[in-house]
Length: 549
Image (cartoon, rainbow, N blue to C red; front, side, top):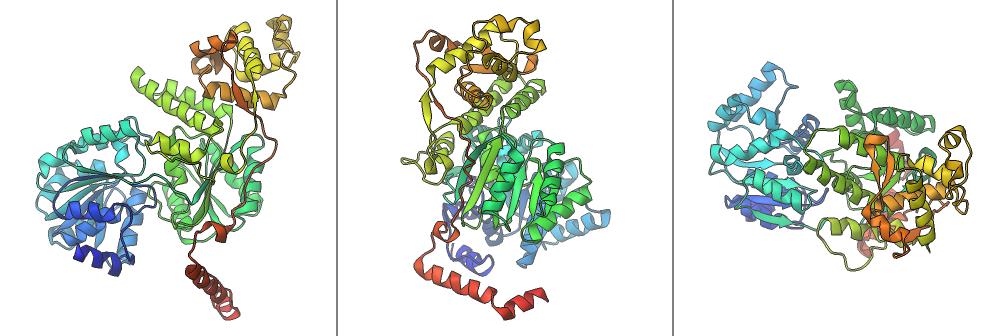
């Protein structure tokens, strides 16, 4: 561990270990297995990089994405370390060069995708090499319940048979208890020491906004809080990615699109610009971001509902990796829920698998619609308890108003029932507010007792309330019938007047809370003096002239 401490200081530039890093590193150095859960930005990579340098041989790192392994190899090379990768982007000559370096013990690290690692030729190559350890990064990919499932990861269970005396370390930033159990089972890590760090990222402020005028809300949020900062905007569809990127560019910001259908060269170019240049906004599908190591991303915004809390947590964790204040902002609507439900129903998987994934989607919706502290709910999802509200999310900073919605719930549920549980939320709301059109007349729903009964609320308020009824389990969406609303058993006592419901009032204010940077960085007084002095030097006339040159 003395050698590990020196590597930490002299090679990586850190003075001390964080979280469980020292214990994890010691475990691997001593030849034992480890299973590591650590938040994004918590320093997971050091947990295998330092032991690989202490132990004899080359560290083999299994990585799920080509772009991810390329970024990590480049970062290690800049530190003067001997790192390489084997993947499909290389020419024959480049791959042969790496293989020769491996055979001649000239590498500290070799990154491979699981598909490449499992090839007989790769196993043959590695069997003749001196291997210090095997690290399985983004280990949640092994779980069918996870949000980035990769079937090839499950085949990594052969590693202890192929390399029985080599320590293995599996690492992830996001895994609930079910996913953790499956990772251990699938990777045969039965003897591994488990290390779980806190999932809390106190420097991130969580803000969840209503979907009305989502793009303009996004722009207001960026202008008020991050007029010159780098950020990531996630969208559900490729078309939305391109539209939002064009919108932000038209507003005067540099916004780059990123999605799986773009030419690989353009995707790579946009990613490199985002990593290299300051103030760039990347607008992307979830194809972007795994392992992105840009410390000063000041905000992550979602313009669509994430599929589950694991994905949301991992994506928002790409903000504020430097520990300074950052924002996680979201705007979503009921259409997102309908789209995701339809994708789930039409996708592959057993009924049990779909049930579990649907429960995860419901938990995500519950987080959005809750009046409780966002951070407490996220941590509770990962089996961690926070005793007091965080004071740094929208619900804590601006507690939402609620009202006794028992009567309105009866109106809403009755409207769903009286219209035959065959229509979506827009139609049911039209009936409630007393709208008259050809469709309503054709079904004679203007003759129902519930028609016009909901004129006490505006349509936008009803949409918010229906989302809450769905989130609380009184209604479900039947994606096979074009998003029709269906009553659940939980609705019965409400309709009978046996259960009271309180609901969040719709807010017409856009609560994009500004971050006061210096107050949020939690700097010590001496550090604040140094920080201010550095800013003075940076903005001095001489330095400004130098930067322009």
